[in-house]
Amino acid sequence: MKVLTVAVSDVSVGNLVQDRHEGHVFRPEPAWLDGNQRPLLGLHYRQSLGQSGPSLSSSHLPEWFENLLPEQDSELRRLLGDRLGLRQGQSFALLGALGGDLPGAVVVGGASDDDGFPEPVNQTESQDDLRLSALAGVHLKFSMARSGTRFTLPAHRGDDLWIVKIPQADIPLLPQIECVTMQWARSAGLTVPDCEVVAASQLFGLDAFVRQGIADVFAIRRYDRSTDGSRTHQEDFAQVLNLMPRHKYGDSGPLRASLVAVGRIIRDAAADGAVEDFLRRVAFVIASGNTDAHLKNWSFIYHGNDVIPSMAPCYDLVSTIACDVDRFGWGLTKGPTLALGLGATKLFSAVSRAAVSDFIRRLALPRPEAALQTILEAISQFRFVWSGVAADAPDILKSALREHWRRTPILAELESDLPW
Image (cartoon, rainbow, N blue to C red; front, side):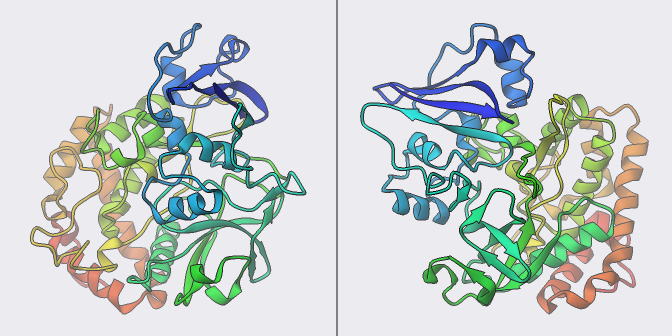
């Protein structure tokens, strides 16, 4: 057997075990269970674990842990695999190698077996050296240390840590589109970490091929890391729903999930104010034409031993309709679609006031009329504050939003005299 220890905020919560047939199971620590699972690993485990722990193993890494890693067959996963000599499916070994710098406050380490793992990338001359981080997702991104205008690898625990995202070669304006989208959300009162567009020439320590042909990148400060070295725990909604990353769009796999499912979980599990925050974010997804707000782009955050989550700060808010109108926008035959449906529809062309009212009805909120008003007022506010960020918006974003607000019914009600 191979064993990895699992800790959250320096508290041992259990072991991940891989048997000789490559079956996997998470075995919780009895003392952690007796302590009411504090600190919390994740909502799924809080609901599913009994005193005896799970009895079944799976052929793949448990879903919650698989979501800590870059998605299989992604560019980032291939890069890490090449660095460590691992195949795509060797998630257990990859988790062991990157376990010192995972998203949130979970740490996986202490691998023991007869054959050995690849040398963990964080175990260099200094145990605080973080050469590569396990960042979930598909595209190339790196956790880098910022000093002035420079972003550097390796980073060290306690540095000012930022996530630097390398754009796809066929979407060179993606950094500008994402940055304006995020600044737009912040100007309307959504919680957004510091972010900016950075010249690729300011990146140091990355392989030259990563920056080849790239003029600019998008950088956002990590909200799960502090300069005092502490970590804040989080989990995304693929983890909350115990789904593999490939099911992040909620329309395949063991569970069909929509924004209704996300909203109901927030309603039942999260702190006061989270539902209103969620409704405003849904309104922004609609207003900005974001077709990629999937389960991994919604997250809970936990502070200390708290088992009641709050909404994590916004991240990966992108007006994707502007990235490529023929792939993501109104150049499609039926127009753009939401990553997660409102319940009855995914088509932006069907997002009317009636569709939003039906979405709220499905959420079963105590004051549905107030919830609808929250969304309508948020859309009006997003329209109003756009002028504050419009000067930095690429022309392609302005034209895409102009078309989007004209053709999305609930937005078209406010379409006249828009400053797009």
